[in-house]
Length: 240
Image 1 (cartoon, helix red, strand yellow):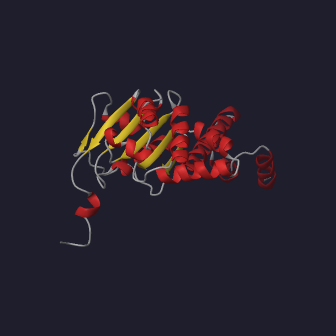
Image 2: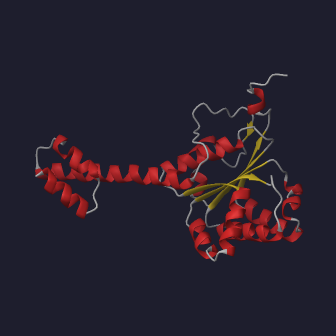
């Protein structure tokens, strides 16, 4: 009987958890048994979906808000700490710009927000900005740009880490602008950067393009300012 149930589950594309756990379900009626069985399948699919979203996000390191210190983070009045941690700004299609020196926790926070979003069954993509631009350029050269842009459009949250660390050429800047423009008022973006807005022209080398990008990013945006010393330097094994 168990083999037959496994076969039917496979044909119906139901999870293995039904086969493994249906005998453990305690119920007084057939209806109660069916409800508990369906609930088990729903929960299993949710877990599978969350795990798939976490994998697709491509986080470099898995970091959460557990133990995270907000002591040196200036959070604007436009968003609460709870809204930030739970990623509620995604529902409003708002952006975050995390600005401050290297090593002050910007990437950690962006990752933690992204992981929380995945756990709420949101689609997330994490990129170092230079890597994203390289993939855009490569996709354009091999004829897959349209498909790549479609994939990015489907994400609820796009995280661009280390924005401005490496200057872009004209083609890369234009492609990055296209990504940002297509997300405007549709989906959210998180940017981590150590460059103030006045220096962004040094990334794109085009004042009009720079102004257009900034305009779209900050219209519905929360700016978080990170201060303090670099965590990595303070905890380095090399002592001066």
